[in-house]
Image (cartoon, rainbow, N blue to C red):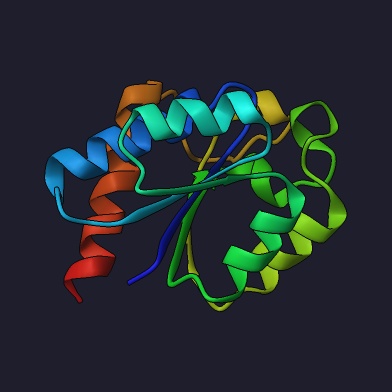
Length: 136
């Protein structure tokens, strides 16, 4: 099972996902793809087994991913101050992978009905969904 975690702008969300996932599923090999080197470094520190940075790694790893997890901004062209390019969004959205997206309003996208959950609660829900997918 190839689980790809994509994050940018420091990688705090991606690092949290990786940390929480490995607490629940310690032997899972996670692929951390940062939109910048700082994000990638944060996710490596959190325990990702594989890592890469930039547009091409997003495109390449989305092709054969089983699950892609990250903030909702990864499907919004030019989010994260322009770090998310159109080819990245196309690769993610056209991937056959199950996408687990964390609603995060700082990428200028509001998801109605989500409520005011804390970031920690959103991370917990994302990791629970990841485990549910892996248990199928």
